[in-house]
Amino acid sequence: MDRQESGITDWLGAAALWCTAIPVLAGPWLFGAWEMWWFWPLAALIFLGVLLTGIRLAFLPRPLSRLPSLREPSAARLKFALIFLAAFLVYAVFRATVLCVAMTAERSVLLFLLPALVAAQTMLAGPARTAILFRLILANLLILGIYGCANHFFFDNARVMWAPAYEQYRAAGRASGSYYCPDHFAGAMELGTALALGVLLNRDRRWALKAAGLALLAVSVLGVVISKSRGGGLTLLVIGFGALVWGFSQWKAYHKWCYRTSAAALAGICLFLFMGHARGFMDRAVDYPLFRALEERPVTEWHAAVAEAFPHTDRGLMIRGALRAWATSRTWGIGPGMHQVLWPRFAATTDGNREMGLWPSETNETFHSYEVHSDWVQLLEEYGIVGFALFSLFAAAAFAALVSLHATTGRRRRNKRKADSNEAADSNVRYGYATLAALLATVAMAFHSLGDFNLQMPATGWMFAAIVALPVSLLAERRGASEEEDPGK
Image (cartoon, rainbow, N blue to C red):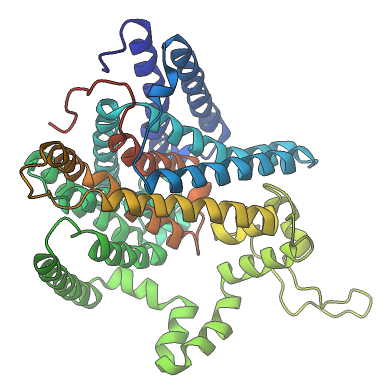
């Protein structure tokens, strides 16, 4: 608790944080909060948290002193990110209000708005409460992964929580944990991998936290493997590459490159052994038409293999249909949430002719596409070039702010005469786990979203937003506020 707060404001701050923490923690256990009867109660809690925070700030004598204050250049980049995010949300709300299918458009806008509110609540919570939230998310993902593994190995994935599992996933031996879809379970486990590596690669000596991180790393990687998610497996490789780039920044240059080389060699050995022994995962991977085409062609012809095979996969059909829809309104898009409404109109190519009895060269008679299976393509399709540009600028500025924040968590300064600087540097080193976890989580979600729709799952989006906002709160300098009790101990 901040010493300048007492009584009602402290209670309001704690209540607001729990209104945010409950959806973040409970959402993954309620099937990702996908159905409206789970989504709306949790969304209402997030809105309640925003209301309580507003009341709390109104009671404080200097409410602006509660806002996180970062050093340059992180502060400037974060400001740009917030400006672009606000512009995108305004644009999204405006586009939603002019559509006829109001509920579908409303849900699409809330998939962006609610994570933004979760991030704002996390940044305003204060370092002590934020550090607790980080540990709660880590523990929650660990338990979620243990449940998914136990459900797979001991109960044959017969049920998802208390509901019957989808038979096509069970027949394929794919674990889905508390999500109906194994790919979404893999998405949650990717966030767990990011948190675990953030803790393990941070240069501090909180061994209990590192033990929890090691357990989460083992469980989350196993969770992705038993989900047999091809996108999840590739995302783990991308997370590993990100860990090599940013994970050893707190050491001197010589030690940094020694650790990177050793880690890369160990990862290569593990990958080689995995590819030789994990037959269930590898069999499903090579069975994908695109991967079969790559396996049959030399590396110099891979681009041609992709051009030939990908359009005929399920994801290829959905992405091509979405791009055909986008072509009808390139600037503004077809409207928030309108993919599933307009999919039947654009599922087939336009070269068919009913009068002449000619079928389209590309048809789809086997499934209905509720989501594009590519968050980025769906963003372009529904929000157009304007929305895609605004959100991309926000994402780029936010990522740049995280990179800048992570640079402040470098190794301790050795000049003993600069006591204040040393104290600040030591504090930043302690919180390096949060910046690294946020960077790796961002890379994971951005990459996996190329070929899946993890961020269309509300609970995954809320978790991701909280993880990304954590370092802003932990590394902020509170203007006019006394230091709180050390949350890192």
